[in-house]
Image (cartoon, rainbow, N blue to C red; front, side, top):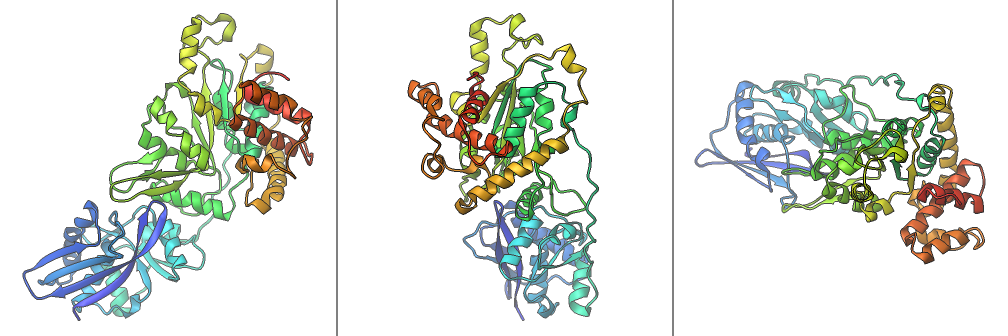
Length: 505
């Protein structure tokens, strides 16, 4: 037999596609040709596979070898095809009977000595195989726990090409994935450790309950970073679908813990202010990798000292914040990643950043305006809550540890989210921040004119944009949910305006 075919999976963005790896061995000058839009890493597979086959005690066929990856129009990236190529090649040369691998997806990178090394993105690859009707996959041993979280899939691990050959020829057993034992819950930062800052705590709770973006502006030591770092502690754990999305993104980035299993805690990403555009929104050579905003999907993206980030990096966030997805276009095709993250930014009010606040600021008015102007109006307009924190006082500082804990606040957040999910389920939404503004401005969800009079006056005067109008309405719904009311009233709208603008109503 001079032809063989095995199954693999190719990854474009976070989406996996079933790929058929064909091998044809024909008379002629010895050569290896790979077709099907391979990248550089895949072109180099011929040398890795040759060394691995020979060092595993197998004979390399001295024939003209053509390897084709179907569908040929789909770009192929990475080294996860190595093991499938080696098996197809040995099957085509008559060295291996491939009947035991019929309908089995094979993933893995080969070392020159025949070892099978782990690859990135095994979880979304395994999930794509399951969606395509595949029931069995063979993956590197180090990735077996990761692939085993996909329901309805029989996963086996392999550590060497020699072990896989013995399985095909003699039925020798492959390696069972380890039994996943949930990691013990770790105690992270708690809201009880934050002294004072009642307004900041209220804003954090509203942001968590409604999925709203948050800006914290205040002098050093006011508690901006402490509040932001404790936002994940009051967010509910991820459900199965969200956990699978988040874990798949971290798998592609190579950031999954060794024990495998789904990530249940909302992720928290805090890139340094020197981060580039590809680091923030995704990119890189070849297959564009997910950036910090995608790694924070269903969690929190925190930009500390936000005015110090490059203006281009900040402006690149505007579209993902609006649409919840990042599309990275490349000459060989685009990649799309989910990016439904809550943005939290922290900023000092001026360059001097005097701990005493505005009372002792040494900056001229022009310098203050120029500093905060690094956060553009269109970006700030997409941030629902914009809170100014006051300097810490001695009496407040001594109260640390006596405030409400994250557990108490998280209970209210869960109840508020449940109320919102029940209300918006017919629209396919779960959070108030996800509801289109057009729905909130029409019956039956439109608020009475008397309750929105101040809000409409601000829109007419130009002090609030149409986007800001909708975001204040969403905030009002979240405040009502937290307080256990079926609909917002005039006081909820007033508090929402205050949390949005910092102006008392």
